[in-house]
View (tube, helix red, strand yellow):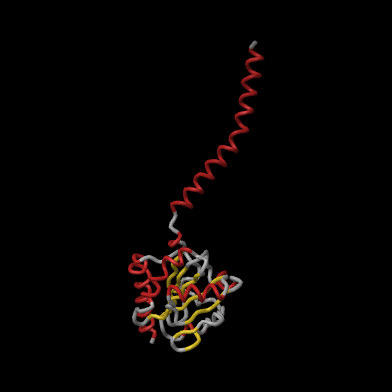
Length: 202
């Protein structure tokens, strides 16, 4: 009788061990999901902060014209010519880009700031239609048709915004759509700090 009971106990104990890996997996999965939902993507660190912008050139968006004629693209060398530049990666198919666009239109009016855009994996016609509808705040607009430039810049998704100082170094990175709060508390202070650094360097 004792042997039978021992055998049953051993069988139950063996079956219990089968569920341990499953329980561990579920616990890790729950913790990972919680971290994803509670994390703030705008706080993700960038390995490029403080370093020169990647050597990527963005050609102009075909057919895009402004008050002074064709809107140019830009090169990495253009970003190191003394002024502070804010670079916004966006796409016409990106819903958060629509939400933040009026803020970019206002941001472009900030004294001493040059706003340029990178149109990511988009159709030229759709990009032009987007800017025709919502306004074009960009002094220059480059195209990243295949997405390779975004990879070099360490872009996670659309939209993302960078502040670049006058020496062509990345001073700040914002992941996700801009908000009035993020512009007031993060972007503009980064622009002013970069402008101050430029003045000191000069």
